[in-house]
Amino acid sequence: MIQDKIDRYTAEIKAFATGKADELEAFRIKFLGTKGLIKNLFEEFKTVSPEEKRTFGKVLNEFKQFAEAKYQDLKEQFDSQPATESSQLDLTLPGDGMAVGSRHPLSLVRNEIVDIFKRLGFVVAEGPEIEDDWHNFSALNFPEEHPARDMQDTFFIKKGAGNDIALRTHTSSVQVRMMEAGKPPFRAIMPGRVYRNEAISARAHCFFHQVEGLYVDENVSFSDLKQTLYHFVQELYGEGTQVRFRPSYFPFTEPSAEMDVSCTICKGAGCNMCKYSGWVEILGCGMVDPNVLENCGIDSKKYTGFAFGMGIERITNLKYVIRDLRLFSENDVRFLGQFQTEVI
Image 1 (tube, rainbow, N blue to C red):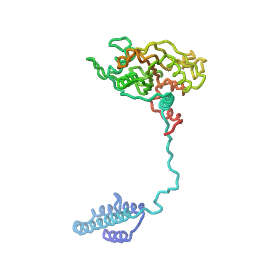
Image 2: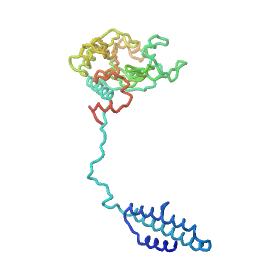
Image 3: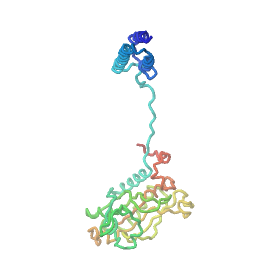
Image 4: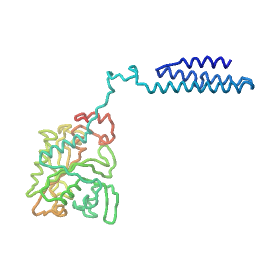
């Protein structure tokens, strides 16, 4: 009968005691679960005669409340107890392994370039990546509608009414800002990210990184430029690296040149990186055009200077034999994990 079962279960519940979470959960499932004993009693209650339903209904509800109160009381006691020795963490176990990160290869090469020029007395200067037309073009001898502007495909943010705003196409804009804000002598390098509207491929990207340099003082000559860059190449790629200068054209320098180094991959024998010529162009350079000095408020009759600019990606390609520029920005840990020279 239902009453006999209730009496038996009540005695069992009164006698139950535990300090283990799994035993308490087993108690809940046995008595209060969706297929537990109390659920079964309610199913049997459906068969009780109408005359007895009122009496047994009250008894059954009181029994259910008793079981629930017992479970809740034990649960509160269990939660308030300090963890037992068996449930504590074993601090003698080895910890989970943590992958060691590394510097990005572009950061490694950027830092190396900066260190080399710092030893020559150059300071680091930085500027905004969003520039106006004056600092990005006009002050650098790019007149409006001049064909030289077509040399650089630009991401314009705002265009028209003589107030163009764009993502900078080179860090030369930082040179302009430095010369406008101070007085010679200047000896600085300008590392940073630049943007050009180019098709992305293994050899080109819509954003990349540059380091440009500027030295303005009295009696600065092209031979000073050549010796500075020759020293830089020997420090970066090692003694014995060959250098050659080829005449070129840039609106902001005159005379202008491009500098090649002997291919560090094939050692001059010829490979697809150097297009089987044995030489790789790594930077452009030249004497600062007098118009640029005058645009920045510097007396071009008293002061002269040289400037140069290089792509960090190109330098990194040669240093680590990386043939696809896209690898630098894809965040593939299989690629990045190879550069453990400096860990973070």
